[in-house]
Image (cartoon, rainbow, N blue to C red; front, side):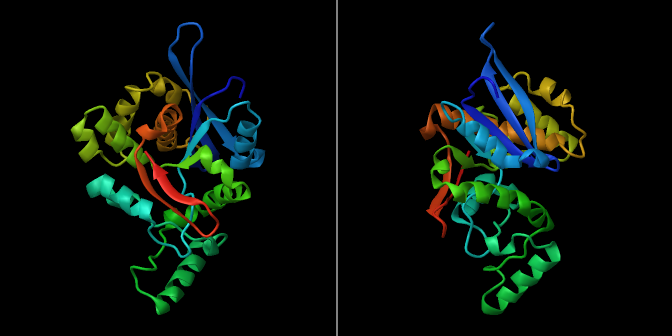
Amino acid sequence: MGKWLPAIGVDGCRAGWIAALAHKDEADGRLRTELRLVRRQDGGFASLIGECEGMTRRPIIAVDVPIGLPMRAGLRVCDRQARTKLGRRWMCVFPAPDRELFGLSFEAAREVVLARRAYGTVKEHPIMTKQTIAILPKIEEVDDVMRTDLSRQDWIVEVHPEVCFVTLANQLRDPVMATALPRKRRTAGRLARMALLHRVFPDVAERAAAAPWPRLGVGRDDILDAYAALWTARRYASDPGSVARFGGDGDDYGLLQRMVA
């Protein structure tokens, strides 16, 4: 990566992982950002982590996937607390999958969860959404990296972009954005999120517009989510006590089921 960067925001996309980075320009002291695509065929998330571990100082990495998974798919403590934070948009936080579902199709995962209901309740064993099952490979990718070395929890943290945006809106004293943020895939939603990010990353619109990758591989919402994660990562890097924290209990492998914003 060249220069050392104190924080990186990462979001999954169809092409792999999109990373948002920021640094102070040595010439004028202004904050500059850049985007980087980490492709699956180039090593994916593990290659990014390996590169960071080669630095003299490791950056804080905020990534938008569950870290620390339940024994059985469902809402973790951090998920419930994040839903409370989002208010009427609580449905943006999906139940987390468990490792038994790794590698399964949506239909196969549905059968597994339905079979579990014979020994529990619908609430205890929620059906995984197609969106959650679609990102299972991403969750497994991060899970493999984290379980290989639990000390990585010191500098790799889980975020949920929508919670980051609400937290950002509150910090900027924008009650409308904090309570009535439009859906991100709508034009109004993208513009609202871009407006919030512009106040902390002045070049975000320029960088997003200049992104050279096809939108089929890297969506506009993926880029904005990576910037939201970057905003949280920068705050965590400068003052860990300044971020909101959700959950924190450990899973069966010693990974913390926590979220920051």
